[in-house]
Amino acid sequence: MNILEFIDRGGIIVYILIFLNIIGFSIIIYKFLTLPQVKKILQNITMNLDVNKDLESQIEYEIKKLESGLVIIKNIAIISPLLGLLGTVVGIYSSFEAISQKGLGDPTIFSGGIAVALITTIAGIIVSIPHQIAYNHFISFIDKIELRAKKEIIGNIK
Image (cartoon, rainbow, N blue to C red; front, side, top):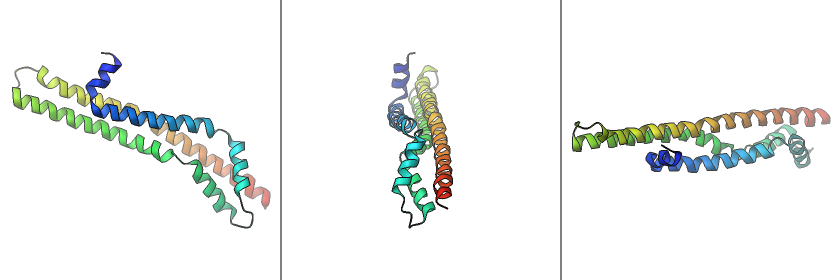
């Protein structure tokens, strides 16, 4: 079975997972291209600071801006396995429907539903894992930027 047949057998849930994957990976690629520019980020934070106000809270505000889009990545990581589980339930339900209509005489009657169940579960996990890894990586990276900003900016002013 090639990948297109695999996707087609999974049904609408796999198409939803593919759509979420495209959105998530677009954000991941954007973050991978922009976040490593630490010096530029620190310069932007420094330029936006008002020395007469609490610097720490201003830095935290600027850091929160860097986290834009990460909630979407996190939600995709969380929702994908749940969509896979939904596909599992739908597939098993369709298997039992086929059995109740045609009986247990032919095992191929319910194999289509089982295939949907397994395909959607696999797809949900495949989508979830890289999004969770990317989210954890970006949060860790942003935390390091925040610590560096506080150390360099507040440390230089005091």
